[in-house]
Length: 148
Image (cartoon, rainbow, N blue to C red; front, top):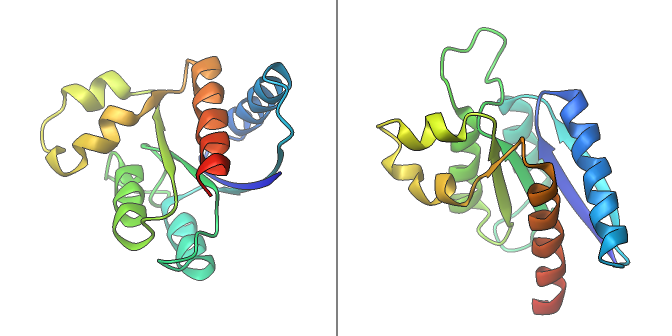
């Protein structure tokens, strides 16, 4: 089966690392999944990509992985624009599954002012835990195949 994943992440090394861990998880589970990746390195690029490629009733990606701390612009003061990408997906593209990730998960969970994003924060995975992240990604992709 072929799957499309959009990774919203500005750290190129992390993108390569997570792709490696996904391949290892696929092999370990003996799944036959072919993955096509697309990467957006900032908020605006991700929003434009989603709006250009997707519609509310037909998912254009099998999964979107979103870093909370993706840069908005080079001089952005907003701390967690990835949360707004999660909200955009929830509201405009409800059929696209997404997985929030962050290195600052403890900080985000303990911060105030994120009540609108509580569910996204709760389902987020710490970037440091690459094995769990890869396992969750594979589980989401294979669960999706069973339900479609």
